[in-house]
Image (cartoon, rainbow, N blue to C red; front, side, top):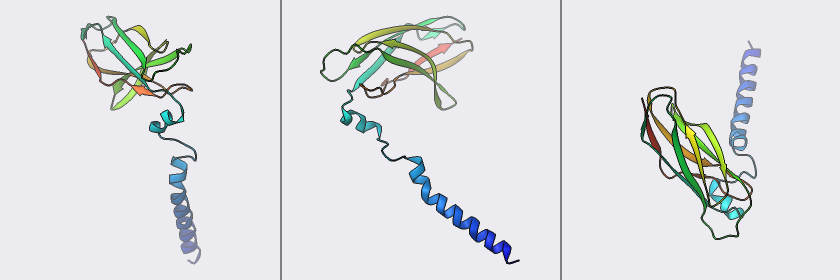
Length: 145
Protein backbone atom coordinates (compact mmCIF):
# COMPACT_ATOMS: atom_id res chain seq x y z
CA UNK A 1 0.00 0.00 0.00
CA UNK A 2 2.91 2.35 0.49
CA UNK A 3 3.82 2.09 -3.21
CA UNK A 4 0.45 3.42 -4.43
CA UNK A 5 0.68 6.79 -2.64
CA UNK A 6 4.29 7.20 -3.82
CA UNK A 7 3.24 6.56 -7.40
CA UNK A 8 0.40 9.03 -7.05
CA UNK A 9 2.73 11.64 -5.59
CA UNK A 10 5.29 11.03 -8.35
CA UNK A 11 2.60 11.34 -11.04
CA UNK A 12 1.29 14.50 -9.41
CA UNK A 13 4.80 15.99 -9.29
CA UNK A 14 5.35 15.24 -12.99
CA UNK A 15 1.96 16.74 -13.88
CA UNK A 16 2.68 19.93 -11.94
CA UNK A 17 6.13 20.22 -13.53
CA UNK A 18 4.72 19.79 -17.04
CA UNK A 19 1.90 22.27 -16.36
CA UNK A 20 4.51 24.84 -15.45
CA UNK A 21 6.25 24.25 -18.80
CA UNK A 22 3.06 24.45 -20.87
CA UNK A 23 3.18 28.22 -21.43
CA UNK A 24 6.83 27.98 -22.48
CA UNK A 25 6.01 25.19 -24.94
CA UNK A 26 3.00 27.07 -26.37
CA UNK A 27 5.03 30.22 -27.15
CA UNK A 28 8.64 29.41 -28.00
CA UNK A 29 11.27 31.95 -27.08
CA UNK A 30 11.71 34.58 -29.74
CA UNK A 31 8.23 34.12 -31.22
CA UNK A 32 6.88 37.52 -32.16
CA UNK A 33 3.21 38.44 -32.41
CA UNK A 34 1.94 39.37 -35.87
CA UNK A 35 1.69 43.07 -35.01
CA UNK A 36 5.43 43.31 -34.39
CA UNK A 37 6.24 41.93 -37.85
CA UNK A 38 6.04 45.43 -39.32
CA UNK A 39 8.35 46.70 -36.58
CA UNK A 40 10.98 44.27 -37.83
CA UNK A 41 11.06 46.07 -41.20
CA UNK A 42 8.26 44.21 -42.96
CA UNK A 43 6.02 46.35 -45.12
CA UNK A 44 2.26 46.37 -44.55
CA UNK A 45 0.11 45.10 -47.39
CA UNK A 46 -3.59 45.03 -48.17
CA UNK A 47 -5.23 42.24 -50.13
CA UNK A 48 -8.74 42.49 -51.53
CA UNK A 49 -10.85 41.00 -54.26
CA UNK A 50 -14.26 40.68 -55.82
CA UNK A 51 -16.25 37.81 -57.31
CA UNK A 52 -17.64 38.31 -60.83
CA UNK A 53 -21.01 36.87 -59.67
CA UNK A 54 -22.69 36.28 -56.33
CA UNK A 55 -24.64 33.20 -57.51
CA UNK A 56 -23.49 30.29 -59.71
CA UNK A 57 -24.69 26.80 -60.55
CA UNK A 58 -22.95 23.71 -59.17
CA UNK A 59 -19.78 23.14 -61.22
CA UNK A 60 -19.94 26.56 -62.89
CA UNK A 61 -16.76 28.63 -62.76
CA UNK A 62 -16.72 32.05 -61.16
CA UNK A 63 -13.89 34.54 -61.61
CA UNK A 64 -12.27 36.16 -58.60
CA UNK A 65 -10.19 39.27 -59.30
CA UNK A 66 -8.16 41.17 -56.77
CA UNK A 67 -4.99 43.01 -55.94
CA UNK A 68 -2.18 43.15 -53.43
CA UNK A 69 -1.27 46.70 -52.41
CA UNK A 70 1.82 47.75 -50.50
CA UNK A 71 0.58 50.35 -48.00
CA UNK A 72 3.93 51.98 -47.32
CA UNK A 73 5.84 54.09 -49.79
CA UNK A 74 8.74 52.00 -50.96
CA UNK A 75 10.70 51.21 -54.05
CA UNK A 76 9.12 48.64 -56.32
CA UNK A 77 10.06 45.08 -55.39
CA UNK A 78 10.66 42.46 -58.05
CA UNK A 79 9.23 39.70 -55.84
CA UNK A 80 6.27 37.52 -56.66
CA UNK A 81 3.88 37.11 -53.73
CA UNK A 82 1.40 34.34 -52.96
CA UNK A 83 -2.28 35.05 -52.38
CA UNK A 84 -4.39 32.23 -50.93
CA UNK A 85 -8.16 31.82 -51.22
CA UNK A 86 -9.64 30.36 -48.04
CA UNK A 87 -13.12 28.91 -47.46
CA UNK A 88 -14.89 28.83 -44.12
CA UNK A 89 -15.56 25.13 -43.38
CA UNK A 90 -16.96 24.01 -40.01
CA UNK A 91 -15.75 27.20 -38.34
CA UNK A 92 -12.18 27.05 -39.69
CA UNK A 93 -10.57 28.80 -42.66
CA UNK A 94 -9.28 26.19 -45.13
CA UNK A 95 -6.99 26.93 -48.09
CA UNK A 96 -8.75 25.99 -51.34
CA UNK A 97 -6.74 27.78 -54.05
CA UNK A 98 -3.75 30.02 -54.51
CA UNK A 99 -2.18 32.28 -57.07
CA UNK A 100 0.69 34.71 -57.34
CA UNK A 101 1.07 38.38 -58.17
CA UNK A 102 3.57 41.18 -57.88
CA UNK A 103 3.27 43.77 -55.10
CA UNK A 104 0.92 46.58 -56.21
CA UNK A 105 -0.34 44.18 -58.85
CA UNK A 106 -3.49 42.31 -59.64
CA UNK A 107 -4.46 38.66 -59.85
CA UNK A 108 -7.30 36.62 -61.28
CA UNK A 109 -8.39 33.02 -60.86
CA UNK A 110 -11.44 30.86 -61.51
CA UNK A 111 -13.17 28.83 -58.83
CA UNK A 112 -15.89 26.20 -59.01
CA UNK A 113 -17.72 24.20 -56.36
CA UNK A 114 -19.25 20.74 -56.63
CA UNK A 115 -21.88 21.11 -53.90
CA UNK A 116 -24.89 23.37 -53.51
CA UNK A 117 -24.18 25.73 -50.59
CA UNK A 118 -23.53 29.29 -49.52
CA UNK A 119 -19.76 29.66 -49.51
CA UNK A 120 -17.82 32.19 -47.44
CA UNK A 121 -14.39 33.07 -48.83
CA UNK A 122 -11.53 35.35 -47.84
CA UNK A 123 -8.12 36.20 -49.25
CA UNK A 124 -4.90 35.71 -47.32
CA UNK A 125 -1.35 36.87 -47.97
CA UNK A 126 1.12 34.91 -45.80
CA UNK A 127 4.02 36.69 -44.16
CA UNK A 128 7.21 36.76 -46.23
CA UNK A 129 10.69 38.11 -45.70
CA UNK A 130 9.56 41.48 -47.15
CA UNK A 131 5.87 41.77 -46.29
CA UNK A 132 3.63 41.25 -43.27
CA UNK A 133 0.67 38.86 -43.40
CA UNK A 134 -2.72 40.25 -44.42
CA UNK A 135 -6.33 39.11 -44.73
CA UNK A 136 -9.03 40.66 -46.88
CA UNK A 137 -11.14 43.09 -44.88
CA UNK A 138 -14.43 41.45 -45.76
CA UNK A 139 -15.79 38.03 -46.52
CA UNK A 140 -16.84 37.18 -50.07
CA UNK A 141 -20.13 35.28 -50.14
CA UNK A 142 -21.10 33.03 -53.06
CA UNK A 143 -24.32 31.06 -53.44
CA UNK A 144 -23.78 27.79 -55.29
CA UNK A 145 -26.80 25.86 -56.50
